Image (cartoon, rainbow over all chains, first blue to last red; front, side):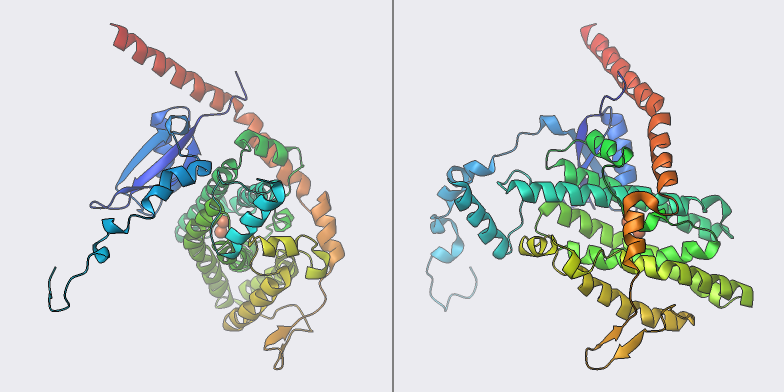
Length: 95
Length: 316
Ligand SMILES: [Fe+2]
Ligand SMILES: [Fe+2]
């Protein structure tokens, strides 16, 4: 059983309350407990966070860049979803 | 799409300043170059802990000990950030370790020099981290996303490394004559190897052109080296130390310092494995890996047991 590589975990950190968790990198650990401890040591040595999420990488489903077009292009020509699409008189100060 | 079209599209993205992310299409050579460069950078951080680790138990004060420990711990962290960045390109951590341990992968040659006196530790922080910072600041804008992000994180931490080193040197320079002599002796030994950290001269660096085109490097070895020299000359003045190069002088016309010839035969000798400590460094890494095997096995066995216990609990 030696030379078996530890699984990879992705690390997400909330830098302070009020902000979202952000992906900061990854690490190797045998289980969630070790992943949490390693994340603390590797990614928060200078008070970079107040909360940590660790997720085993294999549990993440990622979109494929090859499907970029079909996934994201439909939103491109929908300017009417943005406020600037609608024309209002200049006299109108607040809206 | 044909490979030429893909390559053209890829280059267009780079030219437009776009970042490349791991799952994007990339030329095989771009992937290979990054795997090599990032893993060797990671190895340098890890092997780089050895010369300084040599002095952790012998620091003159507790203040120096906490500083040095924190710095060495940071270098371990830098190695880890970089290994993860390389892994996104499809190489495993174990394979990278294997390449380091068998001597197939290189690390920065500077770490094959010995740390003989306490002044060497200050000098490493000042010059070696100083040179690393110049290179790494450039790399924060490199085209491969995970590498650039690791560099941003690393650069935030590096500036303390250089400052603690320079503070040590200043303390020695403001101490007794013997202490100042120690600082000068360390500078004499580390100056030229530090200049070599930027790699061979541009005309002997055949990969530079492609690296610049792909925005892996944004400045050439010689440009970075010159930048380092210009900055460091001023710092040496503040410390009252003499840089061991009789040809070093300000060139008004160029707006840079001229400097003496670098002994490239020494550089190649150390790169090829015949520096003062190449064998010791490699042995230290191999021993750490081999002696850690039972710990890794135990950790794995423990987690498996915990998982089984959980299963049982659920079944009841
Ligand atoms: Fe570092
Ligand atoms: Fe450093």
